Amino acid sequence: MKAKAVRMYGKDDLRLEEFELPQIKEDEILVKIMSDSICMSTYKLIKQGKKHKRAPQNMDTNPVIIGHECAGIIVQVGKKWEDKYKAGDRFALQPALNYKGKLDSPGYSYEYCGGAATYCIMPHEVMELGCLLPYNGESFFEASLGEPMSCIIGGYHANYHTNKQNYDHAMGTRKGGNILILGGCGPMGLGAVSYGLHTENKPRRIVVTDISDERIGNARKKISPDEAAEKGVELIYVNTALLKDPYNTLKELTDNHGYDDVFVYVPDKSAAEFGDSLLAFDGCMNFFAGPSDRDFSSGINMYNVHYISTHIIGTTGGNNDDLLEAIDLAAKGDIKPAVMVTHIGGIDSIAEATLNLPSIPGGKKLTYTQFEMPLTAIEDFEELGNNDELYKKLAQSVKRHNGLWNGEAEKILFEYHGVA
Image (cartoon, rainbow, N blue to C red):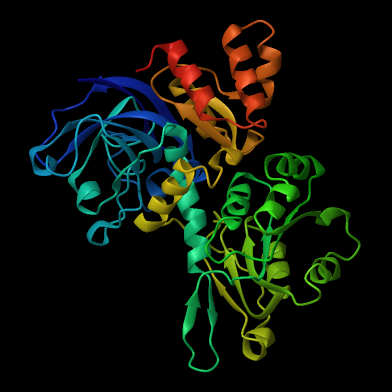
């Protein structure tokens, strides 16, 4: 069958092409991709080309389909999986396979499997590892955003605290503690705030920093301190660029206790060292932001490591349980993955948006692969709606949902483009 996809042939070489998909094998599954959000990890892939650890060396002759934050509908099931999967079922994808020690992953390594496509083929290892997950929510975009949300959730679960009586590790952020999210007004940081209001180990306080009043103002609109208070959490946004004494100001917000859990959401040396300095006794810092520089390093206060048991970890990606938790919470409306989304586009917008991702302002770029649409900022819908009925309807829908992308808006797009 014919499929369209954004395929990578090498460094900075992305092409939207139509090609023939082969017939699936008995241990494969054919799927229809409905939504795919663009990840900074994909940008890192195209900037490195064959040097990327997940990239095949023959991509110049056998190009790979990019995109891994995808969701869609199962179309055809190979004989091996007929007892487990059914045509017509919706799915979310966990792309972090690590199959038998190999780094191959959808969106990085496969000729016929990736999210930036109309249709693709899930290889046997995806199902063998249980990474093709059932999704029962109404909106595809929330399943697409399940993957980045699973990374956030994995970070929360991976943090730990120690028991000095028997040295057991208590996994997860500290219940009733103080959480600091440095550089937290971007898309992933806001996802972390949203999850922090619903995590089992609910904190007493979440402090979120940024150096832009505009980003902080946008964050306040999407997740307000009043909304957090209703969940029993004190939420404080702080512009550290305006503070004369950032260290003492942030420390005082915790009654000088310090932060039990710190998440660093920007790959910045000074941010990592600042977070380390604010850790409380037995505090855990998670360096969440992934640097591109393999020689990236920063200073650690080893005195505090020794005497007050501070510790540092780093997490990347999530596991199946994290993704299942993400899509379940999203389907129930307990978390708001939409806080991450600032732009909407079609399959024709993916290549250019991915190539220029760092220079496009805002948060997550969400794309729908069954139709064409220029990448458009949600905040521009209202103005575009003055001359375009589709954008007018989208603007009205977004306004009804506190400025956020939503399931109603997704349905408006699908109906307009005749997508079933």
